[in-house]
Length: 611
Image 1: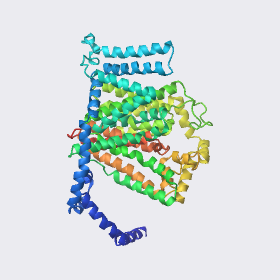
Image 2: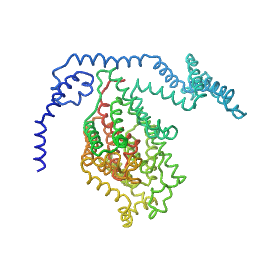
Image 3: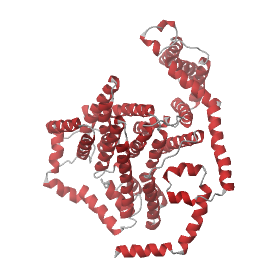
Image 4: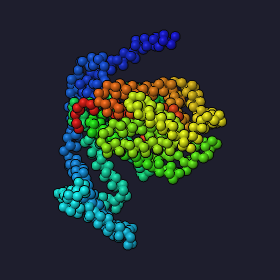
């Protein structure tokens, strides 16, 4: 019956006047774009039928775009490549790379002499202690300038403190003077960060792959920015980073005509999900502010997938990316371990006070909750294990061994049961596909964990009948049933984006205090069953595309890295059955980032154009 109805609907639609009008508009539009920059972007994903629709060219419009639009991009690229701004940034980066101590000493000397002089004359600094600090910092800068001499030649320090030409030294001192003058009128920290942001922006625009390292450190950067800066900067800094990377990629497309912008098949269900979210906003009449925030929470981070996918082009970039990622994971994990050592008090709602009175602490590091930290760690632990087994350099092997151990301890100290199970299942998957030693490691850890008192107590709670009764009354089961009831009442469009079980709904006053603790049920309640299907299709298309590309890899190391990434993604998706992990931007960015790396691996097997 349903089949006949859908067949009849399709027949009526194909013969309708609306379809004929849309088709008549679509064909000239495709012809206009065919052969232009857009055609080059979309060429890898156009079917034979789509190509044949663009045979007839509107040469005037197409040539206008190629001349005007392409000329603008090329002109901006040439200006950026040959401008004094980039020249200054290049000199600065070269100085910092070749003689970092003397360069920083020059900037520090210029800053200290002017800033403290202005503060003592017109500011609020006074007293012998500040005089001592000013003299000490100024002498420290002078020491940094004086160090590059024959004194250290032939010593261990000679590699980091080389003998160098001082022709750029006045420029570095003037930079310190400029920072000092600006810092006297404004916050010096903000001035320094503004300058660093300008340098970084020019660097990313000229070399888009540099933005990858910022994406690798996204969680740590987001924590620092949200902790130290106004809410406006904290809210929009990630959008600025994303824009810089995408514009940098656009400049590289203009510079290297043979290079393409890749969308992959993930873009199609993602676009369908966006359109369905817009329909849900329209038909549920949710307020635009709430609906927009709800859609943004679901889809905005997916842009990092396309940025990562198109920015990385060489194995060396991938190696540096993993190094930065390992350092960030080490910092996050060390902070979590420190929290457990000092027994940071557990916050209300993180444990069941009726069954887990003995649990006094749960680590959460730089994230808002232990569950968020555990979701972040399960994404990367399988990849860290693969890098540990695959790296041959002793220093790299020791680094990944240390970071893997720290991340595993941090995950244990979160006391998150779902994360433990998800990580265990993903490692079994990885052991079957990659290395049987991982199965032995999982078995060993599984045998030792019951000796950990908190571990036993957390799982003992699950077999208590009272726990399940309480959960069905006011816990997870109750919230899941509530979300299911909302979805059944609005099966097509749901209650509207941002209206149930998440941070957006909490801020807007919908179902105050209720978090769904299951992102799939939350999605189903907000945008209906079709919206959930499109969301799942987006995730499934990434996993399937990744599986196909990983199996096609000839290089053993890249193939195993792909399996490690896919195991982490699977662990994250399993963990989302019990948590709203997608609500945390750092976790969603990490998910899309790894997805982009996974789908870019085949291009690292063959020579590609460098940037």
